[in-house]
Length: 379
Image 1 (cartoon, rainbow, N blue to C red):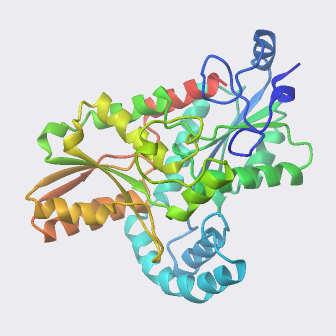
Image 2 (image 1 turned 135 degrees about the vertical axis):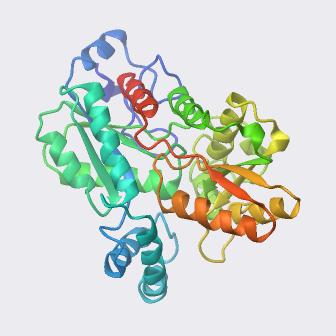
């Protein structure tokens, strides 16, 4: 019996992941040695996925992107009619011009940084894995589309596809939405081969090792404090995920200090464990770093503490130099290049600080390519 026959629904409610016994906590662990050997002889396609980016920094393209992104019920999980009015009559018209200017400030000659890093990562990974494991890149929103990427791999006659959403920490808004779309496309696209999905990888050594190597160019002892700034989400999304899994109401407290079967799909717990792992490897004592959350939207409760408020408070305490990680992003984008490296730096200086130094994302660094290839080859 092959692994596909053994796969059953996991605690997140999906049924697409089946990963092997050498790596516990990566998925189903009941595959036989014979089945494992057989599957490694199959032609495998690799689908790298990220959130997406506007086609250009023009107001019209940014508005189009915002509408598609924010209309996703996993992203803004409110009444559908209220969501339509909120996005189409308020957020998209008012935010698009402002966001377009921000995108223009980070846009390169080659295009969107997030897209360029994704394309470079796919090319390097393809070279690393060889021609027998074709690699395609898709975006949850906008181009290149997930649908076209899946068709591209199908047309190369692969026996199975390993989809890697490039979100290290599981969240319903990013990972859950991407998995939902993959499952919908699996029903829509004819003759699509077996699909495996890597739902999270914040706990895997290949990811942590690559981040530690990137951070090694900075001596954290030269900084007064370290920030681990993750993208924020509304508290209700974590509460909802917890309720769906039957874990009871989330307390947003000590329950996230250790990952268990009950909270392994809790975004806050995933973020905290990522920060703990990085701090341990980099020998950063607990009193010298803060875990915080950025990019909040609206007035409903979001995960705290807020990164911008932490930056101001540290400046008022007399801190002069901050080192900032953004471990939720494997590719530098608007939230890292502008929000942290520009906005937070300016905010810090306004209140007496001197410098907020951004640690670059993994992007297409060779050490990340090596780590990602090892993750994939273990599946």
